[in-house]
Length: 228
Image (cartoon, rainbow, N blue to C red; front, side, top):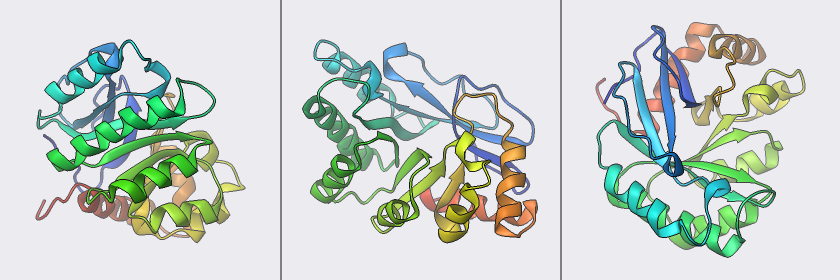
């Protein structure tokens, strides 16, 4: 397990990433690919079942893979897991497998990374049902302020969609949310997280160092890290 350091840029959601000296990365491992952590310096991992790659025939196999491997200390979060109304199996199957992973998150004391597309009612309904103690991180967010605040009120964190957050119209949303609940990501796009930090720092009228310090605090908060 590694920890971000003061001065690091934190990329809270990436895929197939390689280490970069001044960037701390949470790299996502998807169960259907069968990949395990490389234990690279400056990187931790999340592991889960993405709804796009879930079906009736593979659900048990995928969950068993996640269940067997997420005790690895390099895997610090469960997911990405969630709901997608545009791509994936039935909502009932998505909900069942999502909630299995949420229960595992509670058992291991590791937060959840959430994928959600046009299924916010399902996500909030599961949160109300399960009443998780572990925080949930909604990655790739590009919705409205009211929705973001609703999610935050339920002990969720928001990571902005990399392409959305650099648009001028994202500035109002960024400024309207509590800064202790936000993260930034590249999601395997090849985007430069440092440029995303620069845009968001400008939108918040703070320095890049101040934004780095805030997101480091946010990371330590969501992962319950003390004294690092």
